[in-house]
Image (cartoon, rainbow, N blue to C red):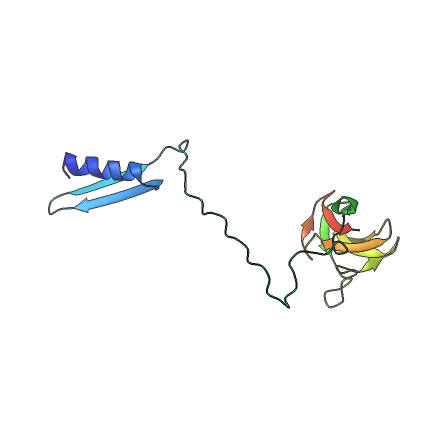
Length: 153
């Protein structure tokens, strides 16, 4: 590969948004390989598309805006955290219904889930009454001490 062609390739690479480039050229008697990589400290600026306007809902369609009655104060949500490391089970057995579901009201002392630790099954109970807003752990997953299991309102 001649010097002029090599210089052109390097200039094109510099101006492109590519981070790496590999090039091989084989002629009858020799092979030329070139690997180019931009410095990791260099940051490329990419164009960001403008925000799209949101069309108003047609008549008869429900509005995307929630009514004041639908809005809940997120500051009043409380987290129910894992008291230990173990496996989270949402139901007493694989074929049973979960102890609680989103939207369900619970009372103080109701069982919310089971955490298996060292082959012992430990019930996690509600420390206060409220409504389950979110189940944050996945059934059968390992949970850490202090990990949020549920959000209650």
